[in-house]
Length: 164
Image 1: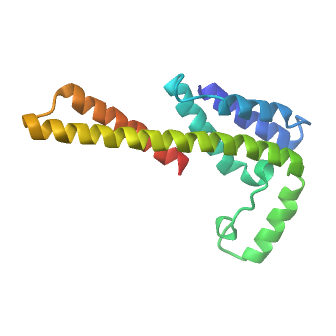
Image 2: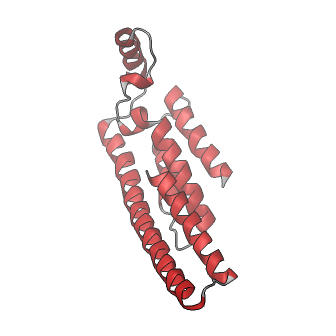
């Protein structure tokens, strides 16, 4: 899995510096990661989620067309820094239609991840209700119930961390 993240980062960097003339291979890598589902391999889905979140953070301006905030650029002479930065990065931006393709891919994956987050939250609440009823009836919880709750909470926390 870490090879896929490195591959994506390497392809993105190689395209930005001009070694790879087309962003097609980077787009294919993003599509491959975005096609992972939570129902399949949980570990692969988690890797895809973190990799795509990292890609969106690092390459937002170049590949997605999302402007960085001036606070992120530095403290001193913000006007000069932002002018220099936009002059430097404008040569590295993709065409608007290419940016739209990357955005569409990431937005689709994000929507699926949000649906998974809502499902994980509902599952966690259901387990909490079930455990509360069982605790009220018997006065104790089995180890299996505690473990199921812990697993559901870990899943929900992971999704929440990477979706928000």
